[in-house]
Length: 498
Image (cartoon, rainbow, N blue to C red):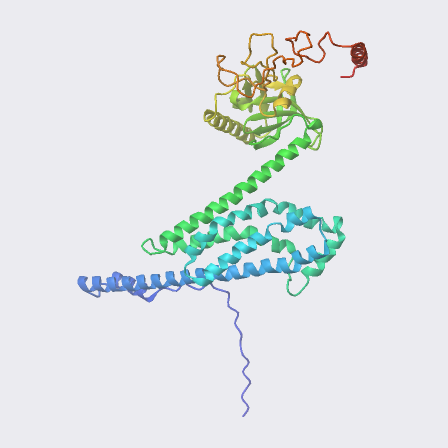
């Protein structure tokens, strides 16, 4: 008799999230507490024993995680150095030999690679000596991570070179395509170049995880803490250099946007804190677009000659020094007023939250600037807000607006017929000068020369010869020359020449 063939039946089950595995000790402890199966003493002993088992499991898990992080630090360092070696072997050396890049572009792309490679090679040697002594290796090498700041500050420019290489340098573009497809490389150069940027933050993350898994009672806790602090200092230094580089780039772009490059806003120590387009309310009640640039010592107001901020699109119409500025808020009208001595400007933004943010930024900049000035010499009282006609004063000094530079006489003047030396100074003295001081040794006073020829009975003149001053010994040719020069000067003045 033939039995019917049984076909397998398949049942589709919906995926279900598996339940978390609960330790046996924890589950047993829960059952003992819920049921009164044991006496109080026995229950206490059993609970303590189960807690010890849990602590041992936690300690074992902590040590295992710590060993995994130590292994990851060494393995990731090996992979990172391998990436640097690929860049040096397949990109840097061939580019140098074939001279595919200009020296300036080459320095931007690969200028600091040798230094970075040497630093990380030294770190790998320290880790290989004792893989568990990570704290000692980083404490020794971490201060040298600051060399990454030069590479990081120029990383954006290096990406620009790579993006435009096919248009600007076709030979280098074809070389990149050929090298990036090699089996030894198999990666884009841009992806390889970003590895140094990510490396120091990676060190910081790994050491932080390692420190969390280390008990304060362990012998290596303090050394790990110190090494992490050094890595954080290096990372903060790199971030600071990058921010300063970006800020300087923004200042340069703002300088290019000013018509004829006036006034000069690029000076040492100046930072651009905030810039944007606000609406300026005139005395007649009309609003006008105004580009406002807040810096750490001044505020610049520019009239927009074009719809967008481009090269030669901004005309400076006012500069306010922060030390003399005050902010008066008019939030009910959605505007605020910047007051600087006798000048004031009412500004607002279309967004109320943006207006509040501008007020907070300006007030914070004023407070910071005033506090910084307290640590310096007494503040000059000649600084004042300037507008269009007085912007020349700002150009001469290049720092903050002030009075025009003027000459002053030296206190070392002698009351005699002999011509006394004069000194020219660009600024007034900070303190009052003592007029009773003797002239310094390097001031030479001209005296009449004694005549060595006894036969010559000419009287010696006490006056010093000065060019342009009449002198009895001048001849006819000299006077004729002087007369012709005077005529030439008069003709130049008539024609408008300086």
